[in-house]
Image 1 (cartoon, rainbow, N blue to C red):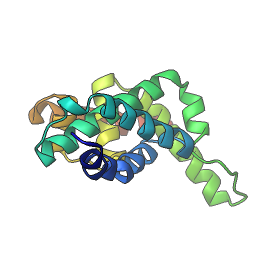
Image 2: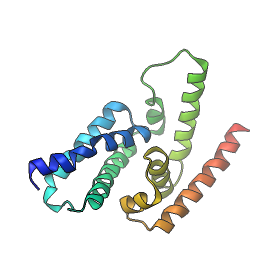
Image 3: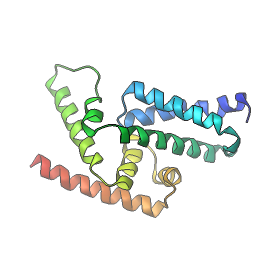
Image 4: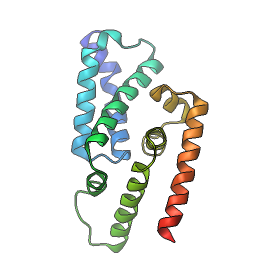
Length: 163
């Protein structure tokens, strides 16, 4: 793959990866760093990148997902929840939103790895079951099962917190 092809095919996914990282709860600076790190790794591996556009997209998203997982593993749950908003807001509804979002982040972080990853990719990454299956290497049935069980656990734990 030439530099021009790489720019057209891989670098064009920059916005998708960046948005996915933000929806997963990464701070903007860390999200940009994760995108750059992933693109650098993909450049080094450019000769093994698939030619098919759909496979290329999924390959890049899987590589990016792995970078995000590495970032989340390095963070403490309270640090990732605190970094959701860079500027404090005086509004009570904004404070409630941040508190709720932080509580949900902690609940998601408490899920088993597979459920946590599937929920983040689905809810924050905007991927459908097909794309999650391709990204994680799991079957679609397994992804549906992980999402179902993860959401059920989140509902149960949310009810315990909010009651």
